Length: 311
Image (tube, rainbow, N blue to C red; front, top):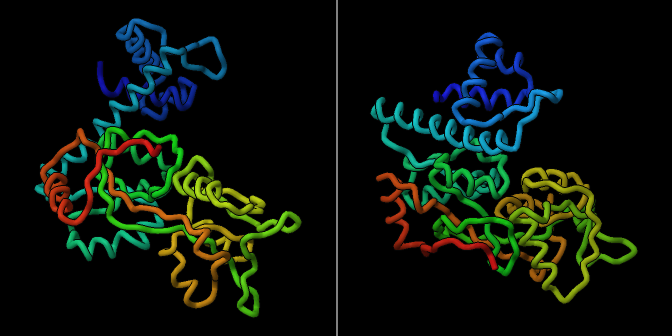
């Protein structure tokens, strides 16, 4: 079995069409069809349901697709690393992180720790959801993942049990709103049943959304909020808040400048703040000299933990 056969199968699963998949793989359709047939013979099962339009995968095909994606991605990453080694490049450590942390925490942290030139952001990760970070760590796509994590009890559907983490900082989500011409907040907490606060929310299944929901549930105060939109990304929510479309909870670092110049103001006092940790994760199975050395250097200044789901 050849790697290109696996790539063929991924292309066919994506296009659900033999001709289009063959074009994508730059081969003739007869050659492409023959490769898929050889792949099925090698696996001993039917992978493609050819009786449907468009084509569909059999249950065995769905299972095989996951294996194909894992293997081809592993080969791609290994090729990149081998090219770096061959070119004599010193291995730099890749860090996946959300855009808000890359912009408002990562550069200063690198400078403070003296890690400049040793770590580089993995920019493909800026649009990921929380689960993507741990999947990428598992398959070795990145070395480290920097993320927000709730300090309080919170139910999250994330499996980080194969990872270790170090707490590298703290943050808090604070409620903010735009101001009117007199500098007063457009929205103030708590709102009322008759006039709920327009809320630009995070999805509840995300890290920030889950942390906020759990915090509000623990408060001995009714919160009257009307969800106007949901967005995974703090930067996008911040822009809408600044334009006056509603209030939201944002990482304090991301709004310091706006709070100082009066563009934004707090929508509630400290009772509404959600405490967070900034955690740096690594997978316990993956090792290389540069990563292990950095992890050891952090030990004097950060706490090391074996990760487990939030209780």
